[in-house]
Image (cartoon, rainbow, N blue to C red):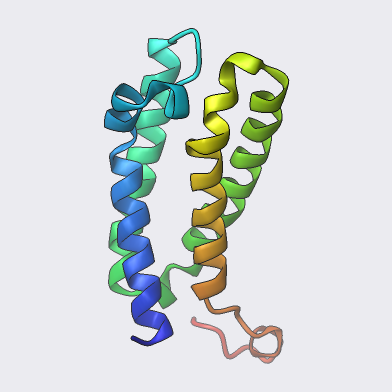
Length: 131
């Protein structure tokens, strides 16, 4: 399997995982939902991640046309996972996240970063980018 095909698979898996956030929060709350349960916050996160999931599924068809979205997913996952890791370490009632959504975010970021091609800066400087 070539790198592009692996990236497509990773985007589909990540997109589906984002769409499954709400069931994960219900089935494994200690690893995916923050205490005390805050329904409004949870729905906001579900909405954001469901939207991202749909766009990642679209990006899987032609990843090279959606590198900005993929890199946004990488870096937002690193930032989100980092903040959550600190909060889970500080608050002992939230340690379950250290084996749930925190590693999931870092794994998503690492896999997508490893598989997503980096755009050549010389290509940009010479104006051969897509216009």
